[in-house]
Length: 302
Image (cartoon, rainbow, N blue to C red; front, side, top):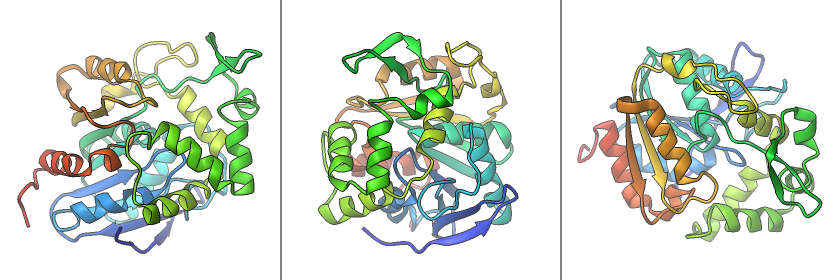
């Protein structure tokens, strides 16, 4: 995996946003990572796009090399950090690619700055109505009629949150690897050297409770999610939308992606990867890179 150096810029929120960049021509592409990850996880994609595009991959607030001066409650706050970074870098128009939680940040950014976003590419993305966390019963199973609504409850969730907080606090690579093997890399693991770098990046996250709460309360649809009323901000997204979904994804169910396609209607194109789960980047990289370059209009261009 090619290594890209970290650069940094201070934005008006008071945060210092780290980012990796490559390429110098073609369309500008902004890569937004998901939960438990950072721009490190995009480096193979950056390498594939570098000959064709100008690529920027930020670390979101509280991840990787970015600062975490202030807590946050919404994905929109993260999107505003990225918008400020892009303004500082004099990016006036770009394609946004968001993986998992980064898809929600990309949607908020496209809604906040509709003239800046020329394409919105959602990869195994959180849906328009957010990612719920449910109260657990005595056996640790989710009670599907009782979604959590308060950040304080998220912080003490005994199954999805507390073990991850402990792993982050203690640097427990074995537990983190087991979680990734079970949920993200259950079909195909990255090369060992890359995997170790990904785990190091994962363990640098400082904002897990904030991010989980932001995902839980995210809702830019016109429906009440049971946690948050719909803001309707999806209507502000002016560009074409591309929904890319691994058919074997066990983190973001295919049904959620299909509902997102129905919500966006004719504005969205739905593309599935039959051999991939939540990490299309590692499960079927060549098909993913080819598909992404096709969407960006740079296939075959050197």
